[in-house]
Image (cartoon, rainbow, N blue to C red; front, side):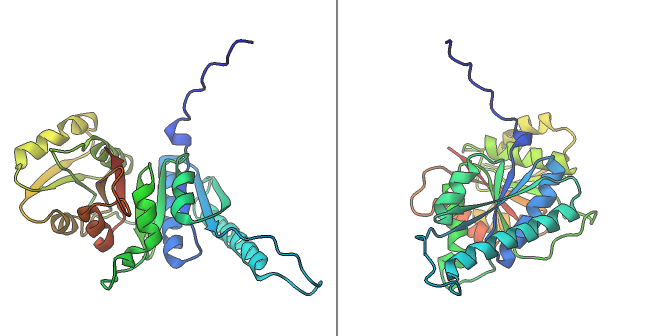
Length: 281
């Protein structure tokens, strides 16, 4: 029998928007954000709850109900409840639910390999220690091979409400900025938003404009401005994105520890808007 030809990759539009859902208010905010964006992109939505794997517990009497088994049932019921809410809010949106056993820091990146992007909830500001963003969010953002969007716990914007000031993308003209810029332009184009490319450093305005010229030519419908400013990169990006709809920055593969560089970490930790971290070499 002759070997079967390789199957073509699944179209990006068919890949789901994946949400790491743990029942917290911040993960609910991420689910609501991802549902709105998945509908805009014509993509399905998948809610994934990751829990600790436990050994099977046999009841010692009919009245004994293992607490761990009860917890699994509660998680499943909560997932289905949120899925029903999102389907009602976005008619026609396909919403799937799934559970997995293990640690979120390893299972969410593994599941995201078959997703278009991964959305996770980010907790509020906490300057006392690094995991103020959420240790799981940091670990997941540093290990995932697809774009990760960190969504702050905040009231969801009503459908049809006026969007904020567009997409802000951090660009390093000396680095591998292609995937970062392409993601930002594609996102702005889908939502009819303007784009502002920002760089902090000595390269200057001309270098920044040259860096985004090719992507801008592919998306002439996206109004584009460029801002090259002196100062710390994290500070500049946070100031420029204060009223943005989305902040897009790059994240290098194979960094040690949690996988985020100092600028990535500072921006993700302090931004008030959703932050998309785009992996690149």
